[in-house]
Length: 338
Image (cartoon, rainbow, N blue to C red; front, side, top):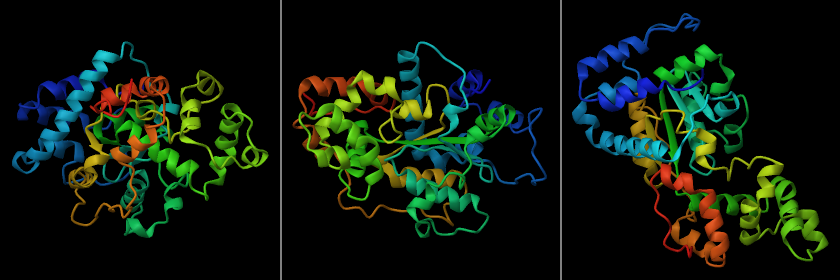
């Protein structure tokens, strides 16, 4: 069954204070499972990122561990409180989980949460020296299927082995800021003609009274209000799944089924990314790219977009993304009138 072992998770949560027991645990999980091909790769002399997180130098990791452990615990509690049924992961569930076998990392990418730069970093880490500078990799190249391996490409025993022994990390963002960022990028930029044709024409046709023929043809002037109508309309999800750019994070990465060791946040991107690179043992050779954008979507910008959305639609939209608010400990935005 392709799930992170529940017992292993509870073990880590309750026994972090016992170094001896943890050493025995990691000795057991780093042994190859039956049916898992390990190839001829030499055994690493350094600790894996997972071992470093839980067994590393306590003084060096203390500050970051407090933050990361707190986020993990809050997410675990939210899962227990708001998720009634557990299920087995399918191959489809694992398509957003990128694997770095060299450094024993699994990263679940979330669009509009620095995922382009994380993919660039992972291309450097997995390229064997072909890439050395993340920013030298064109953004479109980072998203080409096949440049990075996903967990869905492995066999069931290989998947289970990696879920048990690799450091699993995710980066999240305030849900409505991520949503506004997706809208701005996909519907207000002239170069995103594919999104305009694919989604814009449909949204305008369905929600705009008496649309102009040019708008129906191009789909390049979707308003934020029309976008919100599209999202909360039950017909939308019945027709097809959400696009990944506005799909809920919990639906992309399944944090109540997969035990993420690190929950990074967009709001603290640089120190959190540095913590992951430290755990991977590459912080001295690789720097996470910093954003040069001067118009990054923040709370004030999100508030300006929601200003003209009625309380009725605000409430519907909040309910749609409610689990992301709960799981990742984001407060209800003050600007909402629900």
